[in-house]
Length: 312
Image 1 (tube, rainbow, N blue to C red):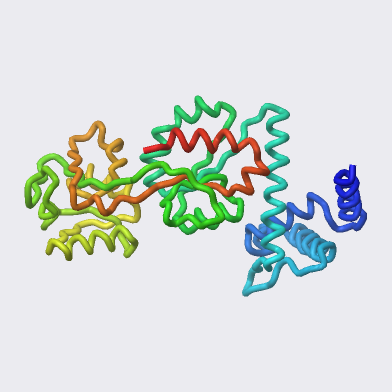
Image 2: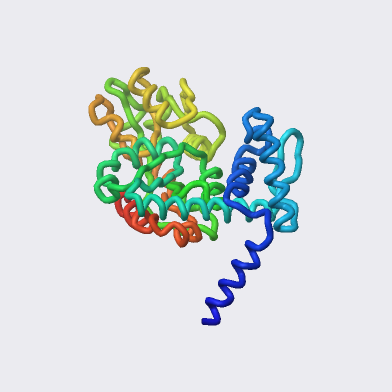
């Protein structure tokens, strides 16, 4: 009885003052996502004026600054960041409840890199759909740092990424190790035995590979230095799937995640599980924000399903 009384008092105190409404919270979230009132209003002067007024009313209601001007846009204050997360979680919970009541699909957003989406998640879609017939999935191709940020902010529901990139505030379920293999098109000869014990098989081999100076390229360069290999890189691409396409069309070899093997099931391309590439392996996990799962109970079954189906 005492708890119920406090609950009623809390809501009465919260709502007796004007300035708080779902409409105002929605406008605030739109401004936060767009990074500015003008961008959120999409050039509509009337909506721009409305959004500015509603954000100001929320600031007056809470008694604190929520946004701060920076250049031509705005940034959220610490209080604004908290309100943005709380409002988004509130809307997500209400939408899930409405969807369940009306038998509508539950939207689930998964962030992952392009390689993971294409070679791990997509091939498991049928299994996921059988286990979650009332789910509507959205896969977002995102860099690792952006997955972590969006999980923390409640902008994606799940992430599939390297375990060592996940912060302590997130929960994880291990999916296994993503190893790397050497893939050879028909007719391409290596500098050593193709059994995979010798790193010399990479020496002078015409390669397509990932561009940039990320962790993969750093490890590839370290391997070359250790074994005194000459890396003959003839093509660089922005993603592993593009490298895989180049292999099929350009006759180049490549070091790719072993899960890329599903790409070449119908192609005359040989996979060599080279021993020197074992150190390239990365622990992959399913990650989520426990706070979001407490609010969106519809995600509980999805978490169990993904942790099982997406195992390597």
